[in-house]
Image (cartoon, rainbow, N blue to C red; front, side, top):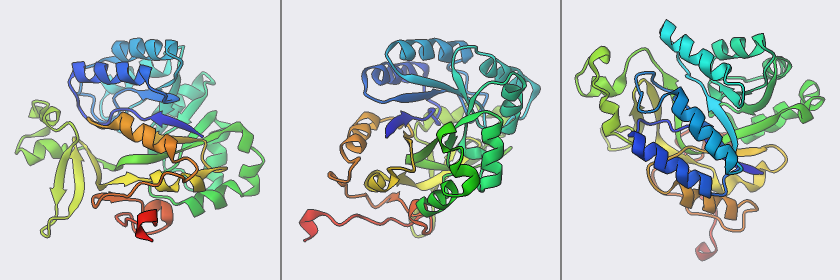
Length: 298
């Protein structure tokens, strides 16, 4: 089982991003995804910067993938997408079918992002045939669903042609919109947002009337209010999941990476916090949190 850091989903200052990836180079993570996937107005780093960082991380021994935008809204974004697809060095994580079209045009392999919403054996087999070498499972699907799908004859026969990856730590990306919710929360129109999301390095929390953290606003992206954490489910992933993805956070990303590595066989369970969840993987409501039984509970 390998571990990856997904793309940074939030808008961080350039210095913070570069410092994070310097630490990534010194860490024991196996794979790193780079690129802006949420909003094209976030230009602290451009494609050329991500490409340079990708080369540095490869020299440090990391697998590197370049991640594309999830919601394309303008011709300029298509031109930027072409740079990623034509980079010539690194595999691309395609987060929409436009990227797949460009990649298959040149018969290039790719990672299929969770936003592609591949739910059944027929669509999965179709994307594998188009060149998908790693599949990021949609975040709302369960271990049982994944096991049943991989056991389907048409998938089992090509199982050695692709890897599976599961987002196992971080606030879940749930939806994208033409509106910018962070700008709206500050009473700003989207085209005059003044990049206000940079003030929220981990998104802006939305709470219900009873104080429950329901959602996190991240520009045009809506995330789960509870942080998804499958640290105690790793033992059940063996044989099903090839790569475990952690979504970068402003603090403690590397601490969590160490915790995940130490608990691959379930020997070092971690008590989940009140604002964490693991329901989807357990075939329960998404906001549900089920804690493992700890030795001190006995």
